[in-house]
Length: 396
Ligand code: SAH
Ligand code: SF4
Image 1 (cartoon, rainbow, N blue to C red):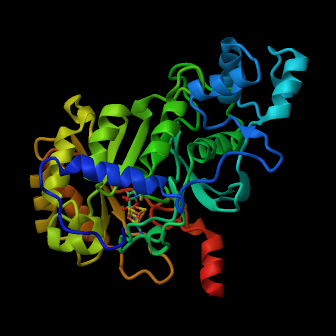
Image 2 (cartoon, rainbow, N blue to C red):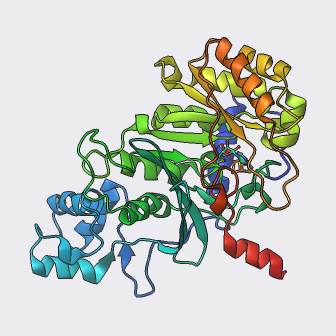
């Protein structure tokens, strides 16, 4: 995966590629470990409703029990069966004999001077991933990781310097959000759209969510379920570096908002800084954006554009960007490059960023400059990279 193959263009080749990605995601080497404790008890977090019902049926519980347990886990945030007051004590004990309601260990929690909070979650096998809570005025987004490491090696990204260690399982993806919610005491879940601090989810942490599609999709279906966490698809944004065939699936099956990490408007430059472009060049990527179902519903696609000094930040680049997105409901997020130790680029000047933004706005698109959040705790975009790996790398 690190060395992208030839460009795909042949019609009909897409399914094969989608299948290939699915197979890769399931490869034992990258698969998440089974959600089972050392004592054999199974973790109920991360199961679909049907799987939960099947697990409970296997210990002789009727279907309504699954509905109750689901509510306790995902609406009330219970981690202990003894708290499930609508369930009789002997049944609570029976559940606790067979199951747990897992949370990853919050190995490190750091809060930035701007109130951004970064969690380093440690999973059962010792692997770790970072999750960031980004507060906004009346709400906030939880930025969730989908993989430990990433296969894609974008040149400006810290995560990309760490090769893929493994995919995160659905339980690990959902429980990052649940762990963040524990930290802010935000249980029970709100009903409907009532405001909460942790109101939105962005799949913009470590990893490429569309290279771990099945686990990400399962996790998103759990968080969207109205009888649990109940976050609407309109409050979830999936960011991809442009895995074209999987964008179609995510759009049809999940209907979440899409963010595309564009970063360059010419193939020669994008080939270099987002190597996946060699497989899915800009023309194919933009076509996939035009097909994205939410876009035809006037829900805007966000184009992320990291501002790299002297590389992609000229007025010509801005004009070409406008040309590419014309006709799409689009918004451009300009991200001043966040440096990390040893990073090969510099952040564009304020003047260049403002000029770029002005050209995009003059063409009628919103073009906010994303204020770097949590830079002091390396929690800003593209700075995430787990400590264990760093320590390991230093030791080797
Ligand atoms: N893999 C997915 C999602 C995670 S990255 C993707 O690439 O879209 C989240 C965003 O941060 C992406 O737009 C990514 O390109 C951007 N990013 C990565 N490194 C960065 C850096 N050093 N400074 C600013 N943004 C960066
Ligand atoms: Fe992976 Fe996204 Fe970083 Fe690229 S920007 S290396 S796709 S996490």
